[in-house]
Image (cartoon, rainbow over all chains, first blue to last red; front, side, top):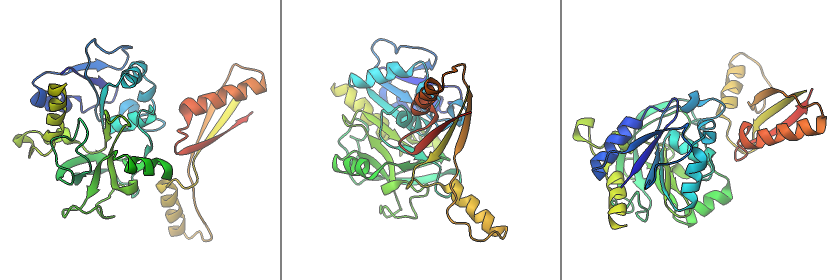
Length: 232
Length: 79
């Protein structure tokens, strides 16, 4: 499985992402600078990691979404390619219109750096196959703009088409307002594209993939990806 | 020709920054302030001299980059 991690100026989570992918797939990902205009031949998965690309100027992810590499990423998506965007990567995917909606400033205006509990809303995706629907896991979050917004029609489509991947929940697994610290609509923490091959999420599963990191709660996401390509 | 692009959050989109400013104004003792909304003004110095073409150009820029029309609306003024 050939994974390519995109590196924008201000990206800072590419190494953790590489560690997580290599641990699950056994293959070291390629790190590709945003000024490139094509993806390496044989790319299976494109990953947009977290960080503060281009200093979050204008809007989070706005500049990166217009980077030289992005037309190639859009073409890859159009051919059914698999894409994962985490945190700033999720923001970039919405700005590039590869996923619907937008990420607004956190409702309480505070940067949130803490663990949250996520509930897996669907196991029918190449990113969530290792979990049972309804399973919960811990994931660190670190963002100032993670407040997922989409209009009513888009939200309804996401819910109806089973495209909400993860929701913020409390320790009992309930999607309460208190658990929804950034104010996201419907407690949404991650969504899938129509063909279910693009996942964007705010929290960082790559931060918990080894006991030395404090847990392996995020590892199933990367193992799910490995499974998906082992079957393919 | 100068084009001034004003970008504002769409109606119904939460503007926590505007809310915080409203609270601060209340703390300072300003009464009678209803909703506060924040946005951005982007000034563009364009080489185009025809007003209609300058406006069209600025609107295209706004749609493709300056505003995210999922959450923001924009208006272009020429000066």
